[in-house]
Amino acid sequence: MKSMEEMIQAAQQAAETIQKQMNETQGKLDKLEVEGLSGGGLVKIRCSAKGRVIGVSIDDSLMQISEKQMLEDLVAAAYNDARVKADSVAGEEMAKAQQGLGLPPGFKMPF
Image (cartoon, rainbow, N blue to C red):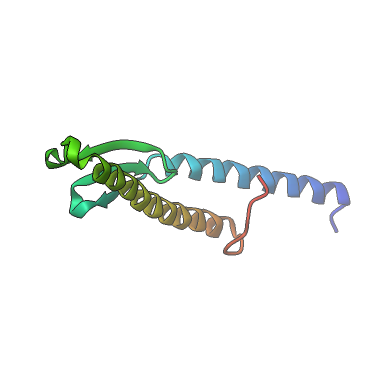
């Protein structure tokens, strides 16, 4: 039978392993890219799965002062589309990481 000290040490080692693997997953999320679209693809925004904007592409046809409000709306819509995709990819990656650690689905890490 393990002593209390051995059990505490084992729990601390497990927590360190989980922290390390979750940090690696977070790093991986910043390298995964998603693309949000709006206006039938006239506006595109590329983001990392962590939500960092990597690039914006705007079709030349929208570059008119009379289209300014529509362009602003399309940029916001493209970003929101990218954000939804980023959240989905991030959720999938975190679920994979938790499965690999033997944690129950939906388990919220306290850090």
